[in-house]
Every structure is written in C-alpha cells, then in structure tokens.
Length: 315
Image (cartoon, rainbow, N blue to C red; front, top):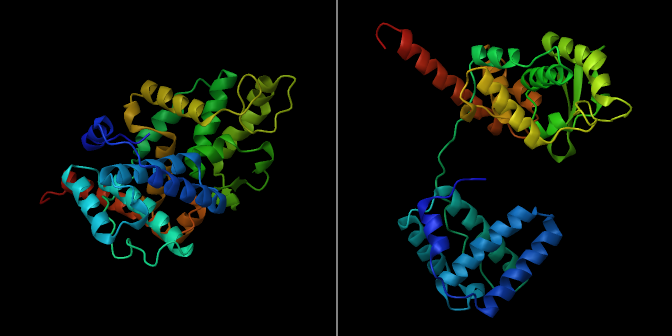
C-alpha cells in the first residue's frame, strides 16, 4: 500500500459535506459502465470512486456532471497548494478524464473539460537494486540440508537468474521447466508467454530441488506447482515476500532494502552493468514497451557515477 501524504491524511479527517444524490448517481453510472467495459480491478474502481467523490464533495453543488475546465483546474490547484502528492493528483486526473470522456461518448455533454489539463510531472523513481556481493550473500543463507531451505535456495536462484516477477515465480507449474534445454517458460502479464534461459547455477539448484526437496515436500500429493510448501501447495506472494525479508536479515542486509521485486531489479541492473543489450533485456523481463526497460539504464548510470566519485582521484 502506498504511503499517504499529510495532505491526504488531513483530507480524510476533514468534515466534508455529504455527497449530493445527483453526484452519487452520476459517479455510480460511470463506474458501472467502466467496470463492464474494461473489467478494471476492484482497487482501481475504489480509488476512482474516492477521487470523484472527493471532487464532488469539495464542490458541494451536486453538479459534477456539468463542471467546467475552470472548476477542475481550481480543484487541482487547491490540492497542489494543500500538498497532495503528484502521483495522487495524476490518478485524480485519470479518474476525471475517464468520467468526462465517458459522458462525452454517451452524449451526456458536448465537451471534455479535461482535454487541456496537463498531468503533474511525476518524480522518476529508480528501482532499488542490490550489489552483486549482496545478492551472493543472500543466496548463501538458506539451509540447503533442509527440504524447505533447498527450495528457498532454488527459488531465490531462479528469481535472480531469470528476472521473474514474484507472481510469475510462485505460479510456475512444474511443466514450465525444461532442464534438457536449460530454459523456463514463463506466463507473464496479459497472458504473454516468454522463454527465459536458466543459467548453469539456477539449473543446478533446480535439479537438486526437483530430485530431493520437492518429493519430500509433496509427500502423497501430486502438486502442479513447481515450488511448494510443506503442505504440497504453491506459496503465496506474501509468503515469498516474508521469506526474502527473513533471509536478507540473516545475510546482514537491511530488510527494508530488499524485496522480491528488488531481485528482478538486481537481475536487470547487473546484466546492463555487464554490457547486456537493452532489447534483449526487454525480452527477458517481458516488458511490452522498451521505455519501461530504459529506466534500468538510469540505475546503471547512477552506480557508475558513485563508482567514479568514490575512486577517481579528481572526482
């Protein structure tokens, strides 16, 4: 969950007027239609509802359906003065565009008041990557004499070797692994499938896990999942998150700096540092757009700057 700003917490504590019936009906009609057309997630629908209702209650006129560009601009300007984060304002603008764009398409109004409103400039957040030495320490932590420890080692090795998303890792079926060819078949976002090379280390640990630890954990079960718990079921994303944090602490790494997604970032950053091609990295990560992958070049550049500043005699 994203941390809220003081302005957002203050807004929630304010005694705003109740929502007018006309505004409630207009917002509900849009969200129902939008959900039916896009299949948006419940969290997204709830966020859009909060944003639209916040605007309607701030106006307190019962006329959100006919608000003009000046009214929207005044609300965005007020939120900016009150210290709302650029990311929150960007989401608000997205909700407003969806709402008024839908009303325009339905013939319920003749213009789109959001047409000339510019989104706020968002800060570019660089992914947090571990150093190669830190990754090595993390991978060495699990007790490979225990079945669960050998499983943890294989999961961490695979996560780092293939740059997987945590959801991709925990949902891998046993049939996704081809040890003979040394590749992993991954089902990514949008149901897109990609083949990722395993690498010798990850392949070796997978072989050891499959030969000894997995049969012990499975017992009489015949699980479809590649990685399983002692009960023979696939681990949850939350369980793997806790696993990574626990092993990071044991490796002497601040757990706040480590996450499953951080291993994916480390995979990408370390490949770029060693000269990997950006297009190839895009395919390995399963990014639909190269611009998403390009953020890792900024990470590599920042690391080179720090290296230069630390070691060059005239830095």
